Image (tube, rainbow, N blue to C red; front, side, top):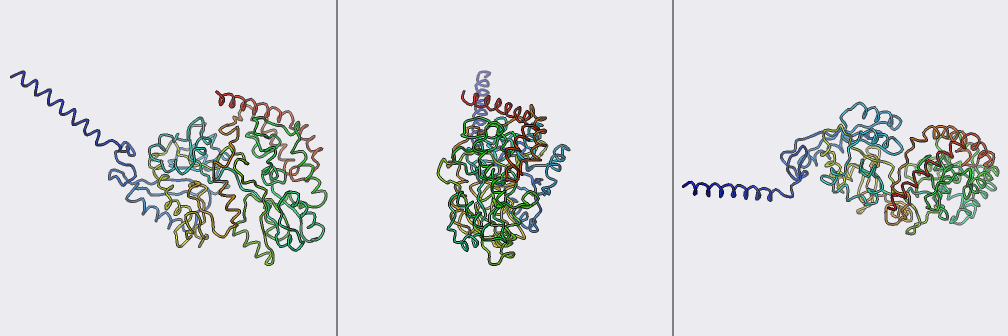
Amino acid sequence: MKRLLSIALVLLIALVAIAGCSGKNEGEGKTPGPSGQTGDGVSGDAKLEEVTLKIMIPGDRPPDMDLVIAEAEKRMKDTIKVKLDIVFVPWSDLAQKTQVTLASGENIDLIFDAPWLHINQMIASGFYEPLDDLLAQYGQTVLEKRPQQMWDYNKYGGKIMAVPLGVSYMSGNSYMVRKDIREKLGVPPIKTYDELIAFAYKVKEQKKDIIPMSAGSYTYSFVNHHALNDYETHVRPTHALGNSLMLYYKNNDGKVYNLLEDREPIGTWLANTNKWFKDGLIFKDILTTKDFHQPISAGKIAIVTNGAFGIGDSFKNTFKNNVPDGELETVTFFNPEKGANLTNFKQWNFLAVPKVSKNKERAIMFLNWANEKENYDLLSYGIEGKHWEAAGEDKMKNLDTSGYSAFGYVWLWNPVDERSVVGGDPKNDEMDAVLRDADMFTTDILAGFEFDSAPVQNEISQYNTVDGQYYTALFNGVIDPDETLKKFEAEAGPALKKIQQELQKQIDEFLEAKAK
């Protein structure tokens, strides 16, 4: 009898074990939901409780934002059960407001940050949650809508610390040109840089009421802008000094060049630009004009640098109001051939999940939802039929931008779903498509490199003081390059040299580790 009981007990234990295994197999494939709940995480699991996500992004709240949020929440009600509290921060207050908010420990679920803002500092201080595991579990669409290069080269310390927001791998660039003046002067369409300058001289000779040329500062200065299409040596700014070309890279060789020691080709560009200023081609008030595009929109200038291939509708409308008989065009020297352009795949804007967030999983669920095509359209452009209408899969027509203007670049941008506006120049659309295709670029040898400025922070501060006095004037031709570079040498030469040496040291270490 005891033997029979023992056998029965063993059989019972075995059956329980089998049942347990069977139960486990039935549950395989289920994604643990927020706070350890089990379900698919996005299909309206009954155990998901409704949460409100607080999202902090820059800009001004659109008048129709509440309409868009209401529609988004309606779509999410039976799926991921998210409500949205979108906090807009004025651009002028962005750095201080976001830093204070993070330091205070206020519960924020998603927050905008950027390399040009303070993302490196915030990551180093431990304010942001690593996202690799969260994206793998809840953000497959977020991952798929961005090419692998965008993920590989926008990590910090080898981890995904924020979602990159971008649609391209370099900026478009061109010169806005008065087409009506060009045609009146009998000048054919401009194809080369030399032809652009020849047109400027013709304007000076024959259109006394029009200023031939103007530009902005740094990236939009004449010399920096010229470097954007330097396909012979690929001159570009370094990681150490923002857009300054006092230190620069060229030839994709991993070397840091110092303009005080290695003048070419930048020295020639500086000399040419200075000659144009002396010859009266360049706007004499170029240094005191806050909005460098304003003079051409007012009809006063024939050529100005431009940070895109095309011209926005609002700018065209302003120009037309000021110059009813005028016409603008863009001229670019961008080479769209595969491999012609270098990129490090770095993005300018990011969206991070703060450590203090109580809804980290749901925040990534929301981003995943927002990166689905129809939801991306809603949050990017507003209510279809009211604010915009589709023109195929990748284009759109604006209907009411006063109610909801596109601002996806601060919280949504991906290169797959972003639409372009119909009515633009087809050639510009083709070039924009090149900028969005990661495989069209040659990878910068320094892709993935991050510069630690701490060892030379004092020298950078010292350099920046001198830079503020001379750089924009020098790179727009206003002052003599030889004399100005002597001043740079006397006032910031040793600091610049030390920054160069520290940057080169870190690059050499990076390339050595990369080769292993």
